[in-house]
Structures are given as structure tokens and as C-alpha cells.
Image 1 (tube, one colour):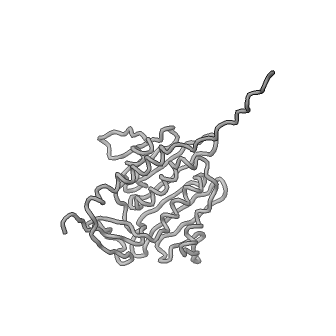
Image 2 (cartoon, one colour):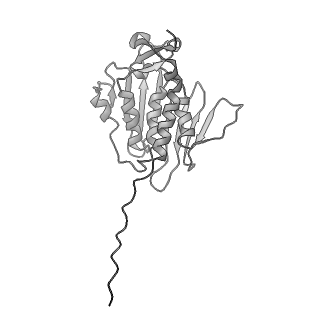
Image 3 (tube, one colour):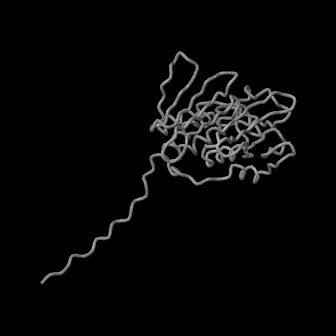
Length: 251
């Protein structure tokens, strides 16, 4: 059909594979003002926030996490770090970075990262201290004691090695981890090129195909960048005009 492209919709989303890293990096640079300063001859990406407090690094090392986000200690919070494996879907990582750069939440209140999972029907099997997806493939745990704690996300099927892992230091703001778990638990499938459907756990995922307008697919990233840019440049609500007392009458 002219003007359309076949697209695969994969569920659960945590089995969809990594996707295009530009879904995260391009909006950070173009909409949020993160600068890049990496060696073009090296296969890695480094982005830094405008205040130089946060850094995102993508380093394609098969033995280590591909994605690392670090935030320096400041007057409001201790330093923290988050890492994501190469096959972590970019849509789920983007939920984390969108929350990190949300200009409306510079000091968001603490939240419960387990809450979105419970609402989606995740529960606690015997061997786990956290919550597992209904199919048992992805597990989220909060381990350790205060000051030495860590959040871990593990996506594994029995007949295969671990597909991807994510880790958050215990000092990571909980509203950021909650944004990640909310996206993780979403039942909406994610789109992928049909020729790039992951080969792992094919029998554990649902794949449907449909044809979508090619123009819509080509402009999806631009629409995302524009939406985030507008979000970041929205003018603050106008402050009420100060009360000016009427002039005093004199004789």
C-alpha cells in the first residue's frame, strides 16, 4: 500500500528490545539543552545536563551496562546513578529521563516505585523480595539497608540468559524510579521494525503487525522533540499584580 510502512507491535514491552537510542538522546540534546562532548572516533555517546550535574553515557561494552546516568551531589540530594542494559527498551528509559528533566518537578516528593506495578497486577513470588510481572519474566526488587540499598530490575526467561538489567542506587530519587516502573508496567505494546523483532523469548511475546503512514513514523521523533521543547519553554504562570494602595488625599 503506497505511503504506508509495516510496523510490529510487541507486548509485553520489556521484551521488545532496545530500539533506537535517539528516542532518548535527541530530545535530551535538542529539547532539554544537554550538551555532547564525545570523541567521534569512539563508539560511545556522552551528554551532560546544562548545569553539568547530570551525565548520560552510552558505552557499547558487552560486559557492562550500555546506559549509565549519574547525578552529582548537590545541596538538595546526594549523588546517585542508574544503569540500563543494551536491550532495555528506549521507551522505558525515556520515561526515566523525561522525569529527570521535568521542569515542573525540581524537588518532587518521594513516591513508591512498587505502586504502578501493584496496580498492573504484579505480585511477590516465594523466592522474591520485590514484585514480578504476571508472566514471571521481569522482577523488581529493593535490596539492602539504608545507605547500602539498591533497586534492581531483571528481565530473564528460564531457557535464556538475562535479557536486560537495570540498577538504581538507593539515593536515586524515587519519583524517577517510579516513572521507570510505571512505563515498565504499561500494557501498551511498543512499535518496532518487523525485520528487527528480537530473537530471544519469541514464544513469550505477542507480536502483531499493521501498516502505518510512513510520514507519521518519520516524524514521530520530531513530534516528541517539539512536545518536550514546548514543555521546557512554557512560560511560568503570571504572578498576581502587587497591590498598590490608593494615593492619600491631602488638603
